[in-house]
Amino acid sequence: MKLALVHDWLTGMRGGEKALEVLCERFPDAHLFTLLHVRGSVSPAIERLQPRTSFIQRMPFVRRWYRRYLPLFPIAIEQFNLDAYDVVVSISHCCAKSVVTPARARHVCYCLTPMRYAWDQFDAYFGPDRIGRPASAVMRPMMARLARWDRDTASRPDRYVAISHYVAGRIARYYNREAIVVYPPVDTDFFHPDASRPEEFALIVSALVPYKRIDVAIDACRRAHRPLKIVGNGPERARLERLAADGAGATHRVEFLGRLPDEQIRELYRRAAVVLLPGEEDFGIVPLEAQACGRPVVAFGRGGAAETVVPGETGVLVDDLAGEAFADAIVRAGSSRFDAQAIRRHAETFSRARFGDQIEAIVRAQ
Image (cartoon, helix red, strand yellow):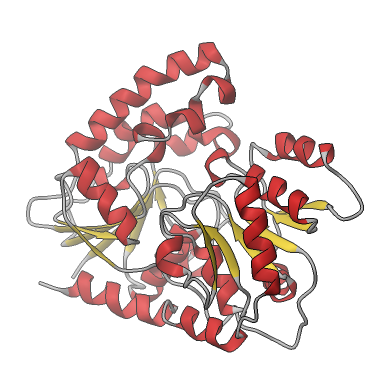
């Protein structure tokens, strides 16, 4: 079997890259293709495959502004020559699923999500409040055209594998295709409890982008008089810092810690009173990393969190995406007696070994 792996872009180790990492370990002789590769931004297992890139790699200021080249991505992904491969596995949240494969090759798409900004989250990324009214007006027809291309190329994979039942529903709705579910991997060997005692603070680990709804967490912690630590960076940081400063006080402190190495994130998980997930996620690795460390999660009860958080056992699910509802859930979580070992056992069912076995069986199936 000659295998090609195709990923949208490689600029950091998020959930999709962690799934790719397991595939690179299971198939060390595979060839890896991606639109853009920032060297050193992903794990050694991925770097070792020496990713082959598209012409997007050579565009001006691409490392910082690669999303501005989004209209060129369909052309770039279709230019990869995969004629030599028997099996193609795409890991796709944007356009990797639309790669052109030879008729004899079997194409399995591990779909992280149909592209959000082209379908149902345009305003969160390109709305007038985000980029200004003139730029938004320019982007709207571009994203509509991209959505049509995304739909028209949905038949290219032979099989879809979704990261959650929530995403499988999106695949059915937008692509009219069925998908089986294989949950993404969580490194439960690395993320584990220690003797740390929980402190008073709540924790967010997230990219600072609109749909993550970090503003809800800031409002909720202000209402609950709970200090909040935020790990991550993104275009929303300046706005969120201003929002946090408006409510600063002795019992409501918000710390923006930026990007941190995994060792420091693990330490924060272990010490947090509760980990928050206020956005609607397609799956959400963070709640499971926190649970692997024995810590409870307060999450919006839609999307992937409904499949990864067990109400009353590993955390609290919130029905209303509002600061007041999240504040009440934070208080309830703080007064509940959660069993750290039971939380940990739940997270272990999402291990890297489980994911590797399931996805390898699908790739090798005839």
